[in-house]
Image (cartoon, rainbow, N blue to C red; front, side, top):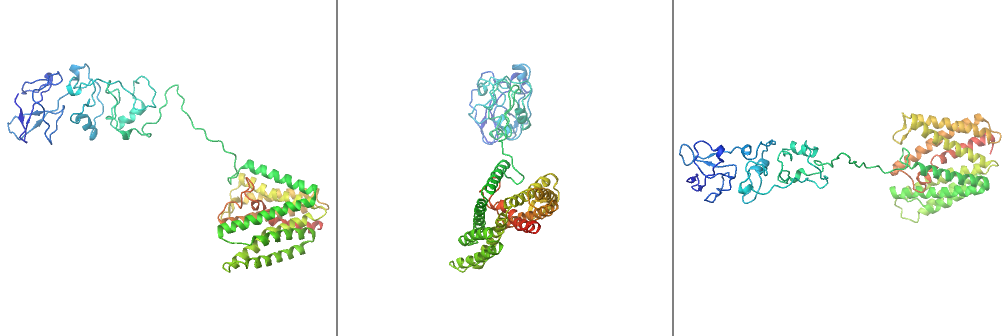
Length: 475
């Protein structure tokens, strides 16, 4: 058959279709796929579609500039028996990948050994057994229905392995962008257990994020130290109070320096704290007040050694610290100095702790209305009512049982007042911590924070309890 000239002036060999599907009027020539080769080499013309799926037809009109392309139908029905089910049609780059292999690169065209062009020299490579595309899939016989991982590919326009049996499942059919974790989750097969991640056990915490077990342990330890020091040697408890006050002064002054760059003189504050507690226990309230005044003067003089910048700010912070921590704690020392001092300290501590405990328990269970949302969002009015009720009950019982000449109704008044002042003291320190931008004053006590986080409700309650006890039963 003579070659046909296209519009470029070059000759292209004519490729004849298989005999059963030869178009009418076409000239005789060798068949593709029978092992016969054409005598003339094929020349690829730039701009022309070429390959096993295209061939040239000479125009019927005989005009040299007109070209016609005929697509050959599949002949699998004659060569390989029943036709295989066809997969979804490809479009775009996927269709080009199946229809136009690169020159010189062997490809099965997506049809494998049983395709329509089996036996063609360009498609005569041996079929490869089907291999799973991912190493994590365990080897098993091909299922009758498409597995879930191939259904995703069919939705994306990729054929499943059943559609082309006997061919290798290569990256040509499944580009790399489809082999990701989101398209290929780890499948679960019958008899295979899917591992479930177990959460790490965490210790129980309160609503505020504190370790409940550590908080209870530290509280029990502090209670044992207080009881032992109170009832073994009464003066020993005074040294426990002194140690707590000194640590509290250091925590407050350190946080002021870290967060606000306020440098309250620490040395005169520590010396003044010891002086106020000692004079309050052995000499009374007058000497304690005088010690507070002398501590303020010592702070002013000590600060003069530094440059005058921020002098007023530092001195004011020092005097506030002297009043807030050691002077309020002096009323605890004065309660201890009475004949029934240990009993009064027990009453003072229990009514304060009951206020905090009752407020937490009732507020956690029934709290709905916020008490001071901008200061302490966790406190509720229902919790305050529960704290007042529990503190009044404890005050009535203890006043009647352990205080000489005490009465239950006096305990009700004392417990109610102690609950109110304890709540105000807690809110006051919350204001300080919010101004400083911190959660706790320190980390000395696990589950509680610092010493000041435990003294916040005790310090304002001490002068109220001392005053009511002095009015009810004398000092």
